[in-house]
Length: 140
Image (cartoon, rainbow, N blue to C red; front, side, top):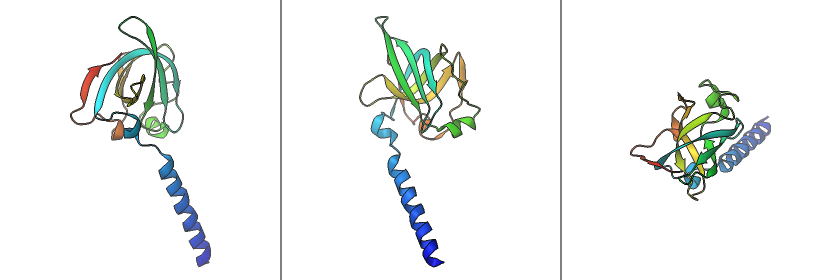
């Protein structure tokens, strides 16, 4: 009986460790100490795991369309608890995101706040919340 318990406990420890190593750190990909504002038109919303993704078109200062992508930091279950579902955002919606820019300087960001068609939507606290002293700025 003790051997079974030891085997089960060992297996659980290995699975837990694997899960912890598999998850990425947001500060590796995004500048979590900076916040930018991006406005665009939604092309796709993927309410999937591990984090929902939003794709949208942004007009740059030259009037050219730039394809952006963003990652929500809360998971789908956390967003569901706040009233979200897979149809909360639809293609054609106008979004204004407060987000943490990509360290690579590509048009990608981690969502910190979002307004959809003029309505602010909750994202909860945690890593998506605005960091103290965050810099606000415009980025096409």
